[in-house]
Image (cartoon, rainbow, N blue to C red; front, side, top):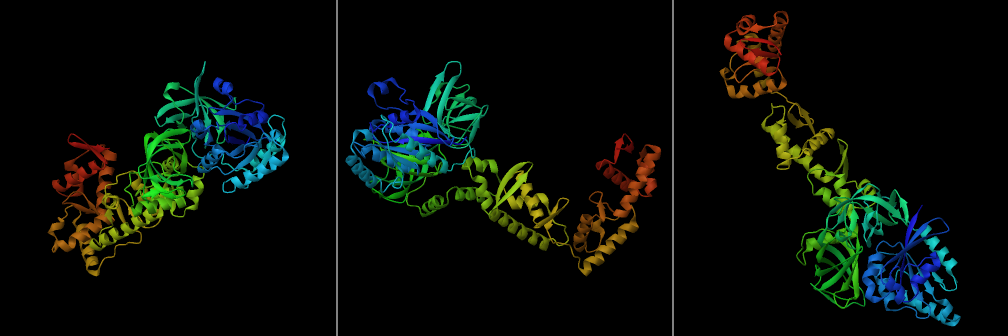
Length: 623
């Protein structure tokens, strides 16, 4: 079943609560004081099912200026607003303030409801319609449908329900994607169950048994039970009014404005970067002015640091940092509202660009330019920046926590600069430019290495990794090396790394030296000379190393080298003898090889080291 959140807005005593009762049959004023005074003080909640089958949750907000704080707590998460205007009074001060608040919170869908039509005549009503149309001409409700109703007689209620249903059917909302987030607007205890919190689930999906964290105090808990509109459910989705029964946490640990989200999903902050807009009716805002800051269901005090202007005049925009007295639990892209510290008047609002930034100096061009890019490209820019700033692949889960948005997969898939990787079942993201830079550096390093060491198969792998990644030691380094092999940038043979197309080419002189070395060592059998005994050893040494790397010469120790052919013969002589006789002494092996004790012991020790044989006292056996 599709769910939608309907919120009321409008001046005090314009009939918001009465309208909800006419729509649902329920009174949302739950406090004794509200019933005695006949005025909504705090948030009220109910629901009803539309003819199409869509379930509409309803949030009734107070209209009196003294309770704007409570109105703000309920307005976050509204999908469609019912702007209630009494026919006998028209647009009033709180009507305007509510519209301003809704605009700053990014709400774009609404219906204008003219109530108390039974209290005026047709001539007055028509005049009031014209006044309301003019009054809303510069707002997001300028083209909104209008319903004229009486909550007393029931006139127009069915027409309003039809309008709400049409709006609800056309309203598109991502369901169940992204991380779950619920700003808490009510906290209470139920006998036999314990702590219960309610709020509008603004994103994601939450289910019974989920581990949760309450931000900003980082309190761990678990979902014991869930209710949506007073009915037990196994899971709740974005767009639903949700009650969560929390395990192992007391009500006195919680407060309105706290946020429930997955552990590690939010990093609470007391500094935020914003794009701030002031109302045309606002006073000029000076740098470091103290304000009241509202987002989600929370309120805190802060100071405005203007980054690109000396002062902010009515109707103007600016990039700013807000230094908050308390930590808030927000994500990039969240909306906010600000009011003057005293008297409390709504003066502006905007969007959070960076939820946990460093402190900035004012009038820094690089800071302003980056904030412009964030404002223009939003999460796309921040995701790419996060990935491009890392020399190693970034876990998808890390980007998911940072983004907290429903269309992350679409952003990643649409970005041709981001490479998607998978290692051991874990998804990673890597920036193409970063990988290209590493590949370019690898080519330069290996090209120079091959130039300086033309007869070496390649650079030792660990040396190569230390030059490429420097101090960045990570298991993911090997991942990038493997990726370079897949992309045919480098090749690896054993523990050596070379350029993909690199092959050793001997000069005619080196070919002669190679053939001479092999002839000498093949004929010498097991009584081989030391390499240093060759004339012009400096020229011979490079070819010697080449033959070792190629496996043509086997290094027994620093002084003794055998040709591959003689080495295999020595191995066969040893294994054949041991298969028949079970054990062998140094003297016997020396005689079998027709060599001296010096060479025989070195060869046997080599076979011990590669676990072909095992020394037991004075004899050796097969390992």
